[in-house]
Image 1: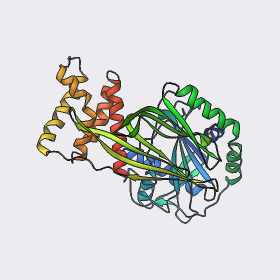
Image 2: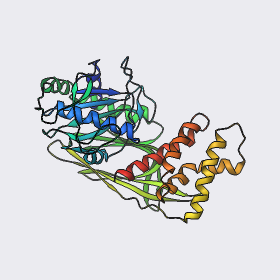
Image 3: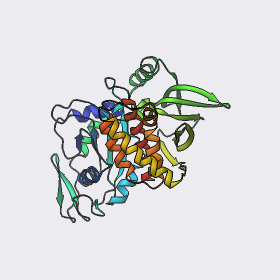
Length: 378
């Protein structure tokens, strides 16, 4: 079993990016340019490593390898994005790796790419890259090549050595459990469960019981053996259920206009553990967004845009405007889900404008955009 934090450290020991490893300060797959660049690198790394894994580490300064982290990113449908744009798409996973010195909610992103042994190419054009393009790595650069080039893996031995040095052990697991329960989450309800005598899952959150059902708020869930953060949210409600073979979460999002709020199930995630030392994560989108009167939403949408502009200025907000600002993320999200597609761009703009003065509003907008990402890729 590979400890992903050790794997990241071992990859970073190769100070220069190469043909099996790339590093990024961040990625922006929510926009065409960022999505195009990401797909280009995935394609190039898959073609340059047809028999072994290749990696992209996200949240690292390029010049000095400083680990600065990125926001937790739980897009379990990133494989859908790759499948939509690439022919012979590789198997791909995005994992959130916690590091002790990073603040809450910040992690290192680890993208693992596994080729299917066939030439990978762009299925359709995106940004400035044309459909049919094939990319390979030359050192640290992803470059276009001829389609019929022969696939060769010169990195198999190096990758195998790095992965071997990242093997987990009992000391790392115990240290991880103690750190999670006694240090990082000593102010929250926390617990752990061992599955199949091998896998240790820890979780923490503010616990509450409603109509006999237990829910958690401010939730953090980690698979300790691999040092992978499975879930993190400061806002949503999560229901956790456990049996001998699986760990299940159902995430709920709070939505509504003004004070009329209601919880809606968003996504169900089941981790199934096997006796052979493997596990599978299956997710199912449960979201059925609420519908509202279009004329009313048009008025709310216009008011939201004006409110963002005013909040970013030196003008003092009225009490009513302060209250509306509190529900800004909710109402933008509802507008988008009811056909106002420009609302996503307005939310991104609002985050940039309001972040310095209203960090809590910025956090709620970030959570709303996370919901949109889940819905879009499904």
